[in-house]
Image: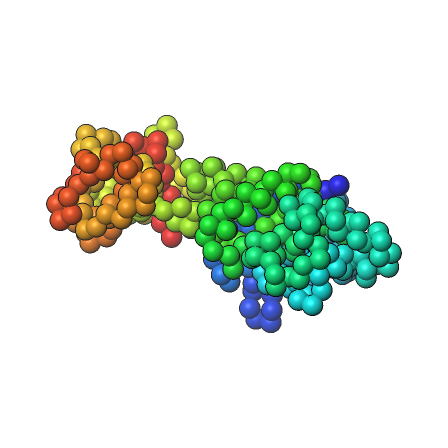
Length: 355
């Protein structure tokens, strides 16, 4: 079973400090939903309010349509996995998993059977008698997930659970978490500051900044159609070209920039004569001087990333331009120290109000 989670105009203040301001969104039952943002943006505060560790200053939280006002963590159909995992080092793995059941008075034989069932679910079958210190970081992560699932939550809350793992293990655990969520059908609400993590795993993502909800959408929607300058900058690498809007025609905005007129899809809130920025992704820049948008940069360095390379160039006004070059095209990459011409199609850029 899984349940929906609804936040209606949630706010949270600690004295004079406002951590969360007027946040509203709905997480569907069985959805993998991530809250993405930099440290201090309010995402963990939101998770703790959903879990019941904090009571919102304003607004309402519903889980499965039921108002959670006044209900503590033990009265909610949620379980939370903390960044530290908080496994008991002197308990074998199966007892760690069954701890919540023991607290509820479940008999030992039933607890052990449930722990063995969950160990199989998280691919740790046969490791129930080991101590947490004998497991790898990824295995301990899976024990923490199994322990949370033992109490049969309908909403699982995960607070940056992969941040302590190395890159390769994080990438593997992403896939495992996503597969586990699909197998169990439990609603996952996942906190992260890692954009690639959120984009890779989630059905939808909420982007937060300074306690304010910036945008909610599917990963591809956030990447291709950012609603605010913050989302454009935070979700993926981008180039921002300042200018002034001179025309908006059929969904395409033209800005006058230091490099002449540039065109991109018109974002919300644009009007003629407004200060704006055109955002274009590195992979949208092509090495050809005859495109609709034309930029010339002096190449300072090329960083090889494996499947592609990132060319870093200096524009005439001193700002940097980053272009992605597929490895198959590196033979034709610009030389360091030489000028290079890049262009892009208006459909692959977006113009948003400045500020």
